[in-house]
Length: 369
Image (cartoon, rainbow, N blue to C red; front, side, top):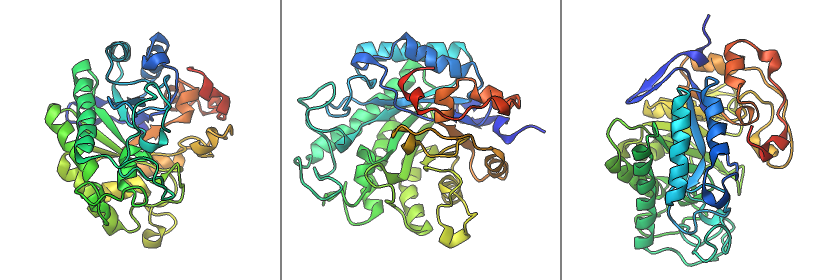
């Protein structure tokens, strides 16, 4: 019997041989923001080993304060775009499909850091999650330019031959800061007391992206309830809240929702459908009808936050994941650390070589395997 992980998926111009998505993972291996041959080879190895869709590490838009690390790749300077062109070419040579994840760190980037240390740090309101005002709130014109910078990157992605694009709206970075009431205190159309009002920034981004790319070019939005600043944070506390929030993106033209959880097996609203209820991606699909990507410790027993604290994780069986996928709870499966460490992970799973799947070693974060 064929595992549901290895059944094809098609949406618009995107045709995938299976449901495995390489999740975006920051590598900081692109000096001066330029992805080199080692980065291209890193992604190509996954493409030749049966990863259905590769979503790159976050790559930053053309705002000076978008990045806190000169070794994080950018997606706007000519030499960096040439590097990405090489990545696309190598992945396609191996028969793979690839999307860039376009990114802005917002206030996670501290003033004075990154490749442009003199640039201002962008934010919704200039306020930290603890309520401290540290920089001025951006003007409407500055927020509009942030929107256009995402659209510029998405248009460039299609021009370079990427197969789709992902907008990073999760984990407490810029877009997510606009979602979050403790950081977004604006009183214009980009703010407000309701989650729906605070979703307008991302809605504008999706609409502008949609204008700049062809109608068959899929657009993915990644979002999360939790934030790196607060693991217990929740944007939507009820299914009704979540439905209203996601409707903003559906109406703006998003094609796929990538719902980041720390552990995919945890229910989103256990008070509604129990401890074995739908996860975040399951609820997003139920409420919108759109395809969704689930992610969060796939194949591993511990979540990725601990990896950044130097902790490893044991392997975890995929039986429950495959069961959920087979009943249509979600459509695609994001795999992070397991694929970061082992480029052959998907092939091993497909060939039933489960005994060869290794525990995760956090030291692998420092190297491109």
